Each structure stands twice: as structure tokens, then as C-alpha cells.
Length: 334
Image 1 (spheres, rainbow, N blue to C red):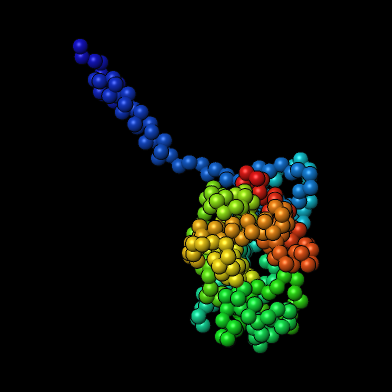
Image 2: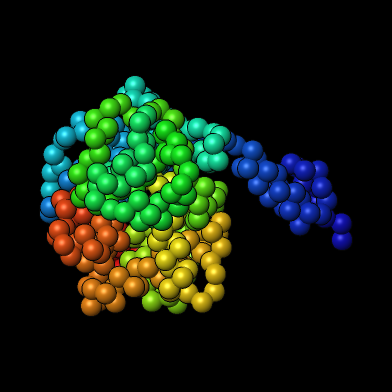
């Protein structure tokens, strides 16, 4: 028996007509512009939290979270109140709306050096210890003498040739807690250059699951390694710190060389983000062994250096770093 004509589609087959109607509805739905959705998440303030700790746990600056919530940078947060944690894009928009522009990274080329990447993005975290930018008149031997280490030792840690000229603008790691060099009070050069040494910063990112999977076979707790990686670089292998540390785990050239010589039988690829995590995990596991399994002390040593921690105790910046790492660890299953 012939079917009746559908008054909308003029089809005699009702199933075909229904199918056509559904297709048309789906096409119309997909063609309708979606209303923009907010990507921010809500955070309820708990005891002891500050705007800084809330921002740091999300790898944002205090200023970004403050601007997004319409607060001043030094505002006190109220226990039990709600703070909106923006996405990176939302945070940038809030800063722009407040007339606050992010600092642009500087770079210099030539002279056998690579251009510096943006500083390690653990925004709100303590600055790298021992960071120094070479001023006019500085020499490697003079800087070493002023900070109490041998020239060869400083060259090794920073991946430098001790016999080569030290270029103005080079980012260096000085010993943690060492006195400031004589020229530290002079304006720092605008250009930044990074010694050509391993590990090599490369444009790659990992996620927390990858970092945890890479860390565990090398003796480092996955959640702790992920927390340190996020604090240090935001999981960004292109990150180069103001103290010449590189990659996801912010490995110094000297540490990279030491790990390859002493902690692994298989040479690590200096351009690999995964091998950067392996090197950092091997180093962290070594620090855990040296501190008798004390995770907080190992994290402190990762930042400050084990010899400095033992001889000088924890600096205030180190205490902040450790507190931040262990706050972050909870986000990664620790």
C-alpha cells in the first residue's frame, strides 16, 4: 500500500522523511554558533591559603588571578570564599583589560650561542637561585673567585669552555647563597644568550601522565616528579631559566653531564623532552637516596643543591619552593 505524502518533505516514505528531518536538524544545530563558554574553574579558599598560593598551584601569576577576580595583587582572600581560576587565555585577557602587558622575552644571536627562551613559566614560584646575567667587564675566572668556586667548576656547571671569552648577556648559574658578584648592581644587559650545551631546549610539551610514567622506572615518585616539572617549566621543554637550566625538569648542563656519567648506562638524548624527564627523575631519585627518602629534603636539594642545603639549611625561597611543590603534588595523585 502506498504511503501518505508527508506535508513537510513531500516524501511518500515516512522513514525516509524522518531521516531527512533528523539530518536537517543536526545540520542546523552544527551551523548555529555556540555561545562562548567560560573556561575558568572555581576554587574555594581553605585555611592558610593566600592569593599567591592559589595562583601558584595553577601555574599563574598572582597578578593574573587578581585581575581576573577584580582584586588587587596584595588582597587577602577570605576563608570559604570562591576564587575563579582562569585559563591562560582568560588570564591574558584580564591583564590586557586592566592595562597590564606581559613582559616580552629578549633574545640575542651570534657568538656561538642560542637565543634565550622565555623564563621558566612556574609563575609565582620562587626565582631560580644563583641566576646572573654577565655584565661588561665580567670574566668567568673573576666571577668564580667572587663566588668561591673554581673556574673549571663554574664552567662545568654552565656548559662553558673555560678558555673561551665570556659573552655579555650570558645567563649563568652561580652557587646557591654565594655573595653577589661585584657588577651585580649594574644594569643587566637587555639581550640574553644561552651557552650551547646539553640539554638542548626544544619545542615540545609533555603531560602529567607521561612524566609520571617516565619517572617511576627511574626511582622517582611520579607525582613528585610531575609537581617539580610543573613548578619548574609548566611541562615545557623549551623553557630556559634565568639561571641557565633547561627543559621540562630544568636540568643544568653540569647536572646533565653528571647524570649521564653516573646514573645511566644508556646515553640520554639532549634534545628529547622524555630524556630530560628521565635525567631529572634519575637525579631526583639520587637525592631521595642521599636524604634517606626524605621527599621534602630531596625537593629542597633539587632547587637549592644538596651541599648547600646541608651546609646552609633551607633558604626562605627554598621553603616556598618546597611548599609549592607539595601543594602541586596533590594535583598529580600524590
